Picture 1 (cartoon, rainbow, N blue to C red):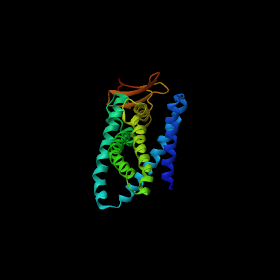
Picture 2 (cartoon, rainbow, N blue to C red; picture 1 turned 30 degrees about the vertical axis):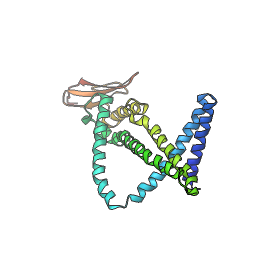
Picture 3 (cartoon, rainbow, N blue to C red; picture 1 turned 90 degrees about the horizontal axis):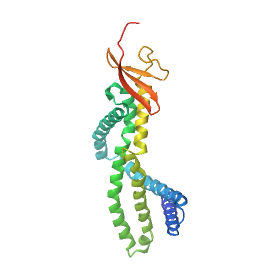
Picture 4 (cartoon, helix red, strand yellow; picture 1 turned 180 degrees about the horizontal axis):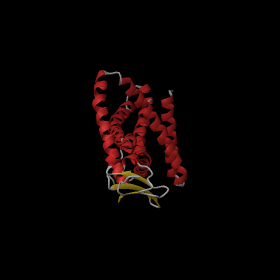
Length: 235
């Protein structure tokens, strides 16, 4: 039995234990770790198999041709999504913060990648159910005996969609955390101290034009960004 098959088997055992515990009405706080563990093992096994399949096709000519436009589209989407996140986090024009936008671009692509993987997992479920049913009803005892492996893959697909679903939702903890990170990156990468416009110890400034600046301040609600008048003058 390979390492991947062992991971599938262990994940299915944990899932079975969790179901039995629920059936006998054990406290859900005790049962939860069994399902989490099962999900992680099933997800890891399926991810490993998917990785091997993808790597095996990377040398194909059609994949190389496909990767070029795909990389361009992903880059454009990442930068656009990063700009939207920064705008939501600061309420300011994201074009004012190029360094923060570049930093946030790879992170901004994660929800789209998670959605893509979730859709692929949903489509793969139909194939997996068919393969499992076919192998389970096979007259070949060896094939029928290994039908459990397809059942593990089905569990892995469900686990994949469950684990990455919080990343897709904009109102999830992940989305809120990304917005908080964006505001800190804006303050740290694109703004500077300027005693003439903002004298507070933690206040940072970005000049928009000769009259206006954006000031970042720490408050109880987190960082706030406001445009204020601060005329540029000789020192």
